[in-house]
View 1 (cartoon, rainbow, N blue to C red):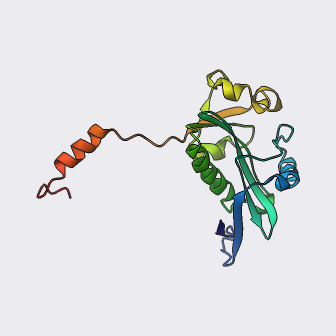
View 2 (view 1 turned 90 degrees about the vertical axis):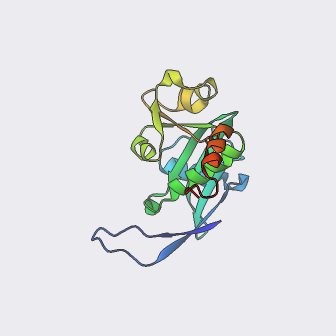
View 3 (view 1 turned 90 degrees about the horizontal axis):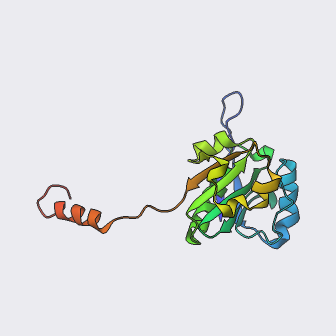
Length: 187
């Protein structure tokens, strides 16, 4: 998928008119070294990174990797990880696009809640609808991950977000259809 992003507003308040073409695609095993380099450049852990990069989305500009996001899927929960954007491309909303698209993909696999561990981006993720949770409230599947158990410090912030679509009750639909009859004024 190709998207276009405008350059962020300049420090003098002027807005450049040119846009950047960003290609977003699923990661492939051949992308592994580039992803590791990006993650290391922003000081994110790579020791436990699966070389096949399952459930990873990547962003490219002119065939150069500029962003990544991945989820470790474990049943109905997932660990959002490796959300990184090259410094020159921050404020293009690349991270938000990657996380949003990835959330939709893993929801189709049955994931209902996403967890993340951060030492620096809790403010950003709060704006994206994530809520802080206590370490003790984390499901076993997440607590047993290397990120949680050894790679990230115990002082890191743990956050979660429900990505499950709300269920519609049949009784709610019946109430709506009962009021929306011809000449009832609601339709």
